[in-house]
Length: 171
Figure 1 (cartoon, helix red, strand yellow):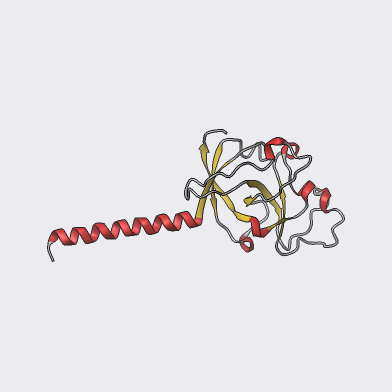
Figure 2 (figure 1 turned 90 degrees about the vertical axis):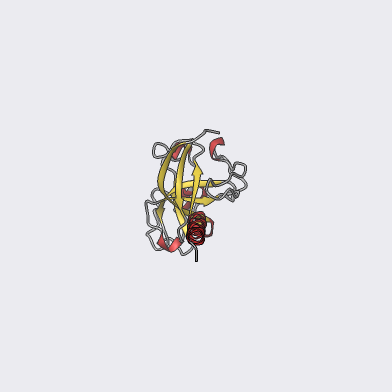
């Protein structure tokens, strides 16, 4: 085998490894842009966040999570938290659709936080049932969350915020 063939094989291996790594990253992580004020002061509109796809069984209370927003009617939700048109993940380019960013205050098995979540005050269970989450925005005045909505389902979970990339373009 000639030296040129060896270099070609090595370069091909590097390209293949880079493509495989990019594919893994696209499957494991996504980037979202914050819209609205529901998570202020923690996250502000325009900031870009790295989200690690996480199974619901790995969630812990106090994690900031991103879910697909499938609510169609939100009355009396503030304008900045109403569903928005589909946006793409910076890593995948695929449309995510409208998403919500909230803090998980109780995950399956945790005690039900009745005092802080009026919509769940009369729930019959004493702990959060499997497949459900209690989510709150850090800015209660600008957040439509479990206080009004009650439980969110884990089947909508995209992942957990792990890093802030910085301030992107505001829309």
